[in-house]
Image 1 (cartoon, rainbow, N blue to C red):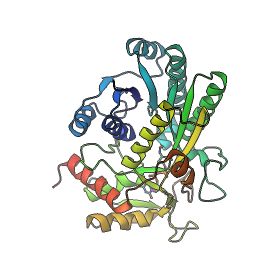
Image 2: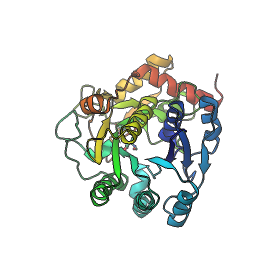
Image 3: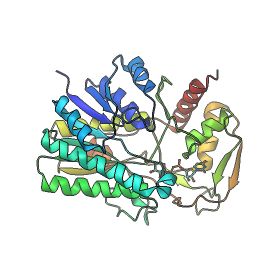
Length: 342
Ligand code: WQD
């Protein structure tokens, strides 16, 4: 009998890639998503890849009654991977209360239901944004968190605190927080990928939309940072590698291999790349010439951050495998598929 996993936010970018990896590892998946930032068509595309269309229910997890009713009707869930959250950094500055209410009430409703319906395990989608601009690089899991640059980032930090306090108070609960660095790329099938609504905030979707002719030019936000080529440095991780880490974390909890009831892992490649290196990598990998211009820095950006992946490699037994060129090519193939470009 396949073990049943609830994936909240499972029609989203990282969620959909994780659903595919869970199914291909033999798990039964049920998705809850409010479709506020994703399309229901993702379900059919997941089925085209894995052969199985996941069960799906549409509602917002900040609604306690609907969330509790879902668990009443879906017994036997062994673990939750919780992606569902608002995640636009800039938007969170404009409407902070929507972000705190949605992201934190959803998590607390899930934790209440975990206790009421005996669902002990949670893998939580956190972010390297909790580190702010670290004093020392690369970043380990012991690197102190800093005040977040945005309400979005603060909801991730507070969510981690809620998890840590909850597993202390309720020993039946176990949680793993996965701190993502910068997820990029798409499934090799080009059937699922990142589909930002409106103007993309993130670098790689803006690059692929520029190459596809949807945007006139990429604006590179600053080349006066204290980095090798002056542009800001990040740790870009392939979304399929990231998805596989979630399957590893779920197995760790289900097999009781966790060494504490609350664990944290950095999910990065361990390599820092500048914006201009990503631009050149895109041109190299795709043969496309990218139109870009250097402009002033973007408010709230950190100068550089990348992960020390030793703990995830050794303790979690997971390592990012896909390189930059393969990953950028997958993003481009996905963009071309979405836009009907040959
Ligand atoms: C990367 C680099 C930009 C767009 C954010 C969130 C983080 C996570 C990932 C959710 C920066 C530069 C970008 C553009 C550019 N999201 N850039 N021109 O800001 O590192 O992280 O997204 O979990 O929590 O904070 O990602 O892709 O926006 O930017 O020059 O048009 O690309 O300045 O240096 P970021 P990003």
